[in-house]
Length: 313
Image 1 (cartoon, rainbow, N blue to C red):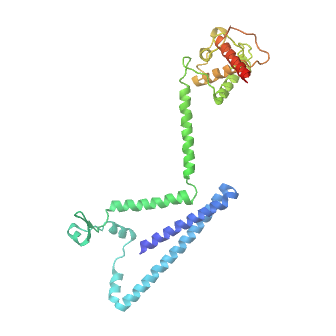
Image 2: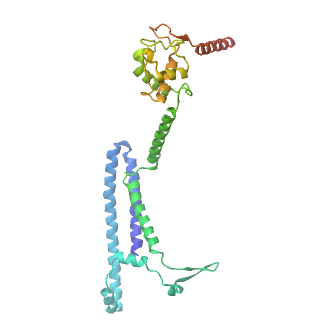
Image 3: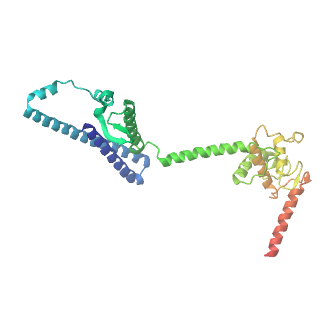
């Protein structure tokens, strides 16, 4: 009887708290989130304690009424049984629980708890469960109450949406770390021109920081050669530019950047340098080196294609 009453109180308390939490979340949408959340949780705690105290008082009152009824029954039947019951040593809650958990019927008395259920010759005993199983059962109940209270009543636990967002952030960090490692595997033999705007923007930052002092802020040239025309001293392909950046040109005063830039960064700045070709900035330095035929041929093909499209239109 007591266990059923306690279970009823706990279930009622949990549902009341959950309803109040939902109401508080609705009310707090128009104000400061953290302040309203703290205030709502405080009010919920006070209301929950008050409700729990009220149920506990009713439970104690019910016990008193039951005991009064038992005394009346004993008075009607005689005081002997009542006095014997009073003289019995009182057992605390832990002793009662332990006895209940270990109340296993001996083998010689199993026939007394043998049930009528028969499944293919297998008979069922109405025996107590093993103590370790019962203990784990109660532990899981206690854990569920704590978990539910922390995550759904206090508001401090993470919701499934928040956990999902955190996992996605971690996954994105891992993806970016993996891509960074992959980008650093390139060299002058397999590098390809990057076209992603984020990579080109990163290449521009590197160019403005490290290269503009010699080649001009727009690649127009200065101490170093002009990088916006079709003439190149050491080749104008992405592989040629990457090689020049990586190893430098010590005899012309250009240092090697492989000790200061990663392979991925060198690929980004080399790809950005390619985008400077044909921009025609002011104050360009005179052409140096040889005309890069591949670049010229590609521009000629683009021009021919554009003219053909214009004629068709």
